[in-house]
Length: 393
Length: 243
Image (cartoon, rainbow over all chains, first blue to last red; front, side, top):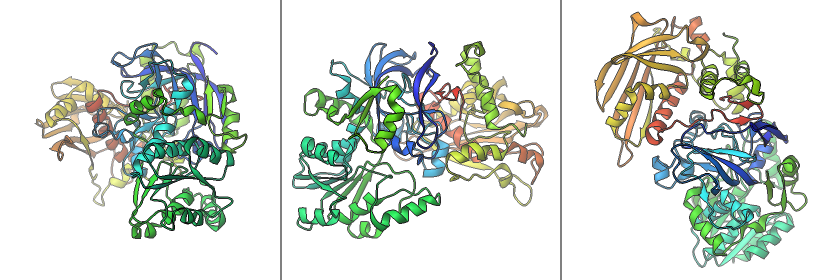
């Protein structure tokens, strides 16, 4: 290793993540900053890349979109950051100038995806570029590395001025704001029952955020016992293990047959299905149709109270065969999207600093970058009670 | 040249993991990377379609299909113009000035061409990469209704080989506070560009991408002062590949 290089986790195909020596990033535009990473996490959505379900990955891409660290270099036009500042870097890249950024719809930024034309071809319009999340969404190098180039550095990173440890603020980079926006999108009212599918980190934060927003009852659904326990212990949720009980029946009995008023899908495309539904979707996938596996969406649409809200922070990548008839006839409202990160950074940092929440409860593994490849596998296989991996480069 | 695959373009980029190979200053190294790899994933110039298929299209699971240049030929052998619009959050006169400023124009079309001013309202365009010697032409401003319309036309006498006949922008107010709707219409006219000509096939331009990406870059430059880039991006492939 030299001054010109650094270590990074790189993608090489299905279930193939490596520690590589790669060139260090440099300032390219005057609005860039370079951040030396002090802590960086693996996200559940990184597993979509690990399992090669995301189009537009290329062998050798640097992974990672949940980093924080210290600013070591700034471009000439950067005004808000100085060398030495400690920052958390949100996973969405936003220019701060376009109509969407002005409307605080930061994850829909019009200017940050250099490959917008490719995304437009697939989606009609391009969303914002993301760190380490395929060429379709920008082709930016990610933050599971020793250094990261941060474009539009005045817009993205949030400065951490207190001496609060990395572990408590790191999840401002994605999963805490994502869980929070999911709860906000659910339009929770005081008498509401909120059901959250998926008790990974986003689900955990959605459960806690729903409590903060005054939900009457929060029900967490998963199949991993320790994740359900965590939702009960930290989020005061009632739980359903879908491997042991029929989710619809359980939810009806817990809500007097009304169904949960607000449903949150914190799972997304790689849901583990049971029964015939699952088999049929796996056959289609085998035929390379690249459809999503929308078991959670289907179940949530079925369970949701008439006129209720379905909030979807879970990542979907292609087409999903969802029952639109029930959705229409039950008059459900659907809200979704990648998180508009900059909207939430300041208020949620405030909640952490005031002690209202300590996000570090989700950490199950703390390792060095060199253990990254093994941790991807452990996390993917849900082994060793793995919920959240934090790496220290 | 027709065999110039994307992979070989990448190999031409100096790899700074071997410091001895990177004696050039960064700027020119990027420049070279830009012109060799043509600065964008989807504007494919001088690359055979199979190499496009092997890289970009494979990346997105074959989900994208584009019309190639020859698809724009009408039965009468004429080129249909390619037109796209974008909404830019700036006033029309500001955009009109930006679009005719040679330095800005060079950035707007930097994904496929180099542009420099050679006289008042006269610009030389050259294709980036291996086709620069074959495709170099001069355009002059043929209509300039400031803040409404700006049209360049190719000056035949000065062209070795022109990729297009005309490059026209129009500026219209967008609803509410959304700025200006900018429409770019390009009339492609590649050398020998009649139906099924070998030259048109060999160029393998993706017209809608070329036009769409130019508008994206115009918008970003106008709204943010920069064009988003992953140039110099580190990866396990080395530094500076531009796909």
